[in-house]
Image 1 (cartoon, one colour):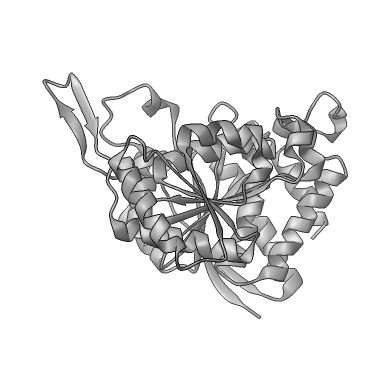
Image 2: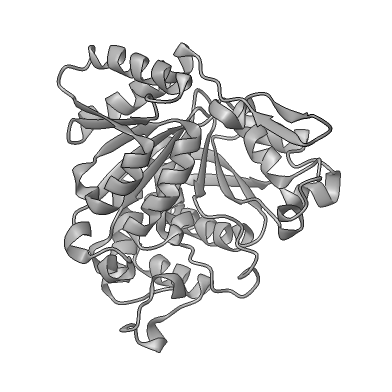
Amino acid sequence: MTEKHILIVPGDGIGQEVTAVGKKILDKIALKFGHTFSYDYALMGHAAIEVTGNPLPDETLDKMRSSDAVLFGAVGHPKYDNDPTAKVRPEQGLLKMRKELGLYANLRPIKLFDDLLSASSIKPEILKGADILFFRELTGDIYFGEKGRKDNGDTAYDVAQYSRYEVDRIARKAFDAARLRKKKLCSVDKANVLETSRLWREVVQKVALEYPDIQVEHQFVDAMAMLLIKDPRRYDVVVTANLFGDILTDEASQIAGSMGMLASASIGDGTGVYEPIHGSAHDITGKGVANPLASILSAALMLEISFGLKSESDAILSAVDQVLADGWRTRDIADTTTPIDRVLGTEAMGEQVLKRI
């Protein structure tokens, strides 16, 4: 029996709806496999700003540090999107969390369930069998560099910066994963233009010498954006910088059919954070139509990576696979051939998965 303490951070928008379903899945796993999971809750993002004025209150950070893992929803709110003068923003909490917890590696599995071939805008014959694991560096790059305005506010700047150490540690995580998969790794950069990318490639090439069994490929980020759609089955493990990873994994969500299908794990040397890659989606908040499968799959990643419970994680993956094979869909993964009575809301989709665990 395993005893673990999990912090639930619903965040904003549909994050609150999908994490509620993710927790139910964890409860079912604990019951079926004889584990004990205790829970606490904390505020973050817009929800935290409204109460405390801070997107990541100290209390939340303390709870994160004392937890075995965090199940996170999403942050964001429309009121900040069109106000460039706002000094406090929900996303600042996200960046601070990553820095404070040392979450330098973001793992994003891009796996297509066969029953969702028709949900993607990409041709099935190109997609079938695609299975990519992205490693996105998470605590460096332009998101964390110096930023500001000058010339009376008419000129803005953001500085991209990487150290050799930062690149080395994410590269090793990716190479280790490649050894457990197909022994193929693609590193993505922009070394023909950017000095940070030249350092990135230099370090990856050096680390590669310690992994002679791994087939290594380097791609410029603009070429990779095209190749991901043209030939996704070509790739297995992909490692890249923070900004490039942010963009490429959202693009790659179309391989899986929807951002509502993609989970992620942010890990480092302490507490891991597990979350869907989608945002707070305020346009559908409160309507009960959000796809909870990414949160459910994030819970599965938590069980495997942070707790070492592979069988329990596999039970969730199998349940999701069965639900899709039985024709159940949320509206984001439905198509013109999906019967209307097979299109479910957030809670109902969660119940279908629960029945199969």
